[in-house]
Length: 479
Ligand SMILES: Cc1ncc(COP(=O)(O)O)c(C=O)c1O
Image (cartoon, rainbow, N blue to C red; front, side, top):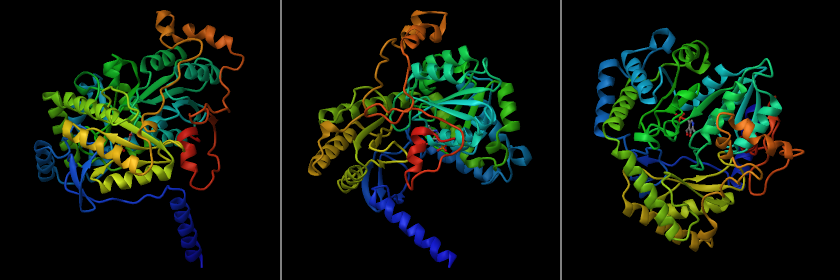
């Protein structure tokens, strides 16, 4: 029978996932996302929540959500363009636009939906999207759905972006539109995109820019206003995407930009148009969280202090971790099964840091992704580092071999900062000699050692090996 064949195939696929160390299951957290939780009934230190500022269960945020439920109800009842736009949506949009330093803002159901919607609105068939190889899956999926040509450039590599834009043309040289899209802080690596270079290049080539600040809002930049604000570039990009689901302790997302851009998005972004408006309690909760962030930015400093303490403690235990203030700390183990073993054993010892494996990260770079929260203490961080180190050793893993991925190699001929030396003439001009020196600037087929395969240009989605496909996408973004 069809059903039996179907379920046998599904069982086989599940078994294969398990065999590859790629099986997933849900773990149950009782109570709010605090620094310690009951995980499947066992008390653990929580080191993998994106509730960075500890606002998801703040009394004012809870109260605001509860009051909103009483005042407006739980559901918005319709999409925004039908009857789902309520006062609470308008209020949060106005506050977020001011927070981002932009004219206007549009709420979406989630960050995933926002990325699908914006990319699809900015690029379509005949257009080109330039995308960092380690962008979040929602960006990858937005690229695919858009039907644009997708050009994937090496992670944080402005020189490679330049080369890609020269090769595949910006809007000036072709009829199509171009879009450059990047995370600002990368979700699984905790490193930062070269935003200034990206903006310069996009301007030089007449391309639009979309920046996803999901992990930067509330955690980075002046008073937690993000990486674009830190670089003074808030006004220089076409769309700033943020989520309400991380620092802002709720659920939903937003896009900020010029008034005309936002009007365009509400007319064209399909994930906005064809989805129910976010629920009033979620929006009111995020509004209260935003007010708290603006009133008391000390939470951002506290988060940075905890991130520093976590990194210092990990380094003291022998892990390969840099001593900065980034709240996302990847402990790259490499092998999928080893990563899973370390995760399970650490939970047994009372520390919960989720194992992140393909398709979320490229094969061979599986990791525990640690996330500091403002609600942790320095003592929590010391405890976590000690447990992780002793657990790793017990499993025969050397902490000295575990840590943040090696940094982006410096360009061979023209360091990116030289771009600024050619002041006023732009990155393209500054990098010109380096590009001319290379017969083939980058071999787009050949991988670099210890780095994901080289960028690719894709049209239609390629057929993929079982269970491997999503991982390939994470690397090559099949369109
Ligand atoms: C960089 C990035 N963008 C977008 C999203 C999706 O946001 P949301 O959880 O609101 O759908 C995430 C979530 O993990 C993310 O890390």
